[in-house]
Amino acid sequence: MGNLMEMNKNGRKGLSKLGARLLSSVSAEKRSDVFTVKDAQELSGMDGQKLRRLLFSLKKNKWIETIERGKYLILPL
Image 1 (cartoon, rainbow, N blue to C red):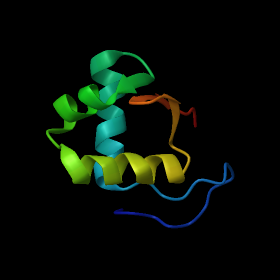
Image 2: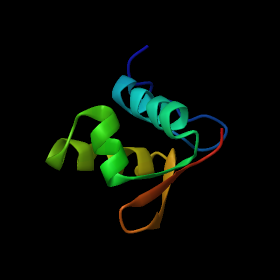
Image 3: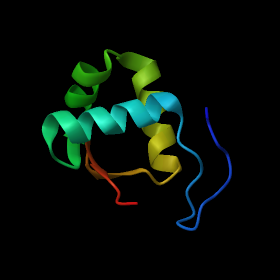
């Protein structure tokens, strides 16, 4: 599957395996669609530049939205 770069009907581009894993972990572990950078660090084991790039990509491709600095909302399918 990998990273599908086709846009779907919501205007989203594909979701990478790493992005899918993070969003699934947040939904399952927190039982919420809202998460913080700290949550993402703890659930993914990533930090620093790699995590920032992943969050930027998820936001750019319309999988998440910033609620406030460091806090994100997973957008519904």
